[in-house]
Length: 165
Image 1: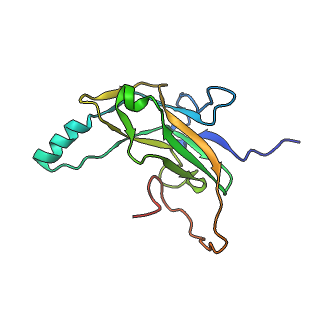
Image 2 (image 1 turned 90 degrees about the horizontal axis):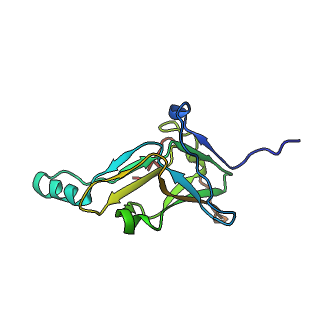
Image 3 (image 1 turned 180 degrees about the vertical axis):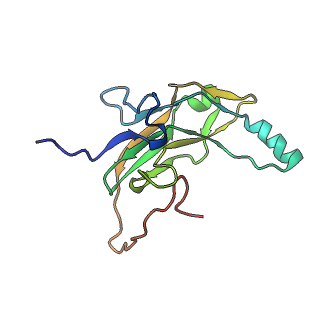
């Protein structure tokens, strides 16, 4: 009898025919799954953005590198997304949100099918290009608890950053 899968990675629907690396652990005791860039992405220098902000009033936004991968998990689990420890020192890349939180109901959401993204700021004075199959960061699955009085029954209606203002 086959054991049902409760936690797994899958391609998001818009990229199901593309070839790219799936998240994987580097060693048998690695807590995190390394995520990889599915294509080349250039992340502009924050300092160039700051000059555009000062002189032209244009807002500074992080560059989100999408993995084109979604994560299926149990309802009481979360996938936390962390930067690579070498990214700030070697590439000047910092996650804009510090730690990403991927809720279990993000999988298959209607706006982006659960595409897990890494929103980076680049603090080098030059643009940085992440190459296809280069490691972006890592994801660690965790179980979490709720307070006994929790009565939330609202359903997710969007994707990236959709659960609050």
